Length: 366
Image 1 (tube, rainbow, N blue to C red):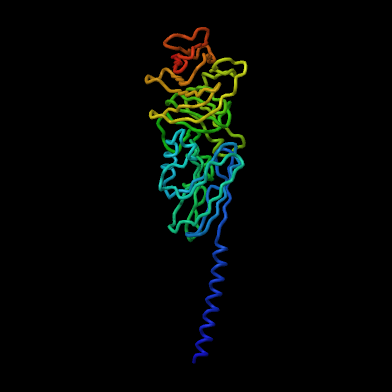
Image 2: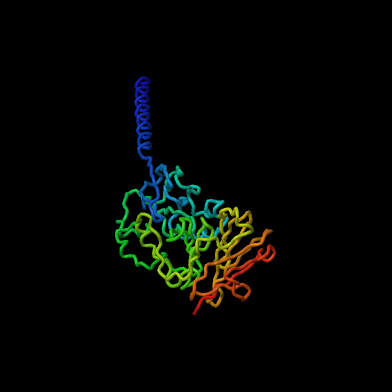
């Protein structure tokens, strides 16, 4: 009796041991590895993928783009909420990798520069659903996102009918209206970080009103141009065309020339300006910060309440040298004034005290 019991126990142990070995093999096979990179036009190259509930996942995100990017995995239905939170971080966002404080964020990479790769190791949620992933750098999250489908069936809708991925990845992307520059209506002022004609990849496109917008270049720390009319057409970017740029839909009526508009002190050994970030002000406008000739410069471009004048304000708190400001003058397009008077000879010269804070007004011709 004891001998038979011992044999039975031994057999049971062998079965259990084999079961554990098989379970280990199943778990090993169940692990999933995802590799995501970037396509031209602010797109992830994989717009969606599927995992099983509780599956072990390794996600490699390689930034092969000229722009910086990050990747956040979020709870279902929270993408726009998290993107808006990241946008409102303003200049402080860069130091925190544009990762806002939110319980909706499940996993995230840091900001990745060109050529860098971030890896996320996680266990997929047990609750089935569609979990968005997104880049939260300013202006990116409204068009640069994808979907992680978590379910046991493995089913996903057809690309043409998938509302959880960008329109550019859907088969019916051609039905997108060319003038739809945002997935939901925005109230000016608002901005995008995007690719623009006549500017470096580090460009800001800022919508001041329903009829006025400007492009500001963070690489060269200067205003590039101002236009009137409709905002931007992102179609080429959404479709991933090589070297695609956002198309200005209005008419450019002011374009700054190649010479530096703002000069501090002597120009004999002028150094290139260095972009140091920006701040989203309470009124929705942006304050750009950069260094020039060893001085911190704060620049804001806004619209006067009546909407007929563009206000360009500068703060240089520690200025110790005289400065000059010389915008490009275009006949018939309007004129710059300082303290209500036209710039003498089209050029403004200020001593160190007056130059610490000054405002120019660009009066638009009716």
